[in-house]
Length: 171
Image (tube, rainbow, N blue to C red; front, side):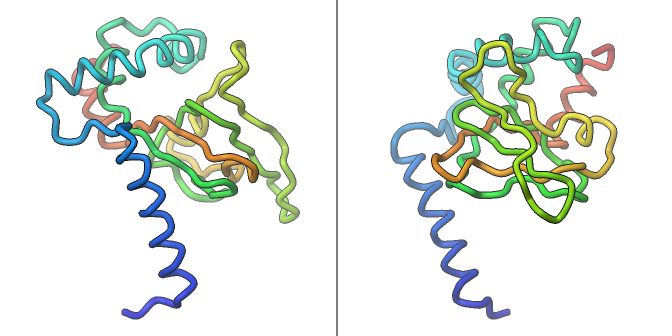
């Protein structure tokens, strides 16, 4: 099918942006598993511990569970103003705001910012969309990167979550 030029341009811009991040050495694609796990734990474990251990969703989880989850996270970079979750969609990913500011938009049609989730506030949870993700219900809000800066999310997919819970059913 042919896509409108504006959509083609948006797709190309998105992938060029993603590629620019990979060239800077942020991705660990196609590494041996042991090395990939070591890199993931080195890069994300402190973040996961500081965000998950104080959040009700992960309260009481074992260290091995959090280590395994850390290795399943993938990075997603958002351009300024880019939406990553929409009101009414069912979550297929659990997102952690690793760097930047995410804006949660109002539930009405006005799209006003109702809440900001910032990576730079130590006592604020940076998990986004957890209720929809764990309970399989539609999102109540739309989430987007702030319009003035890019955002880095750490993402746990639904498939990886199911594998993780299969390995750690007691969690």
